[in-house]
Length: 47
View 1 (cartoon, rainbow, N blue to C red):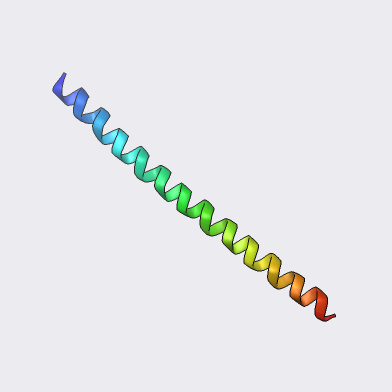
View 2 (tube, rainbow, N blue to C red):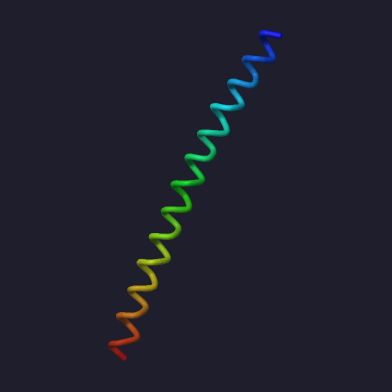
């Protein structure tokens, strides 16, 4: 019973770390896309 409780706790910590990583990855991806898009717009205006 105690082992099961510990496993659930570890799983919870692991999933929250995973969610944190996913959030940061999504934010990084979105900012990269925005940066690329603004760069692309500037390049398009130069031509």
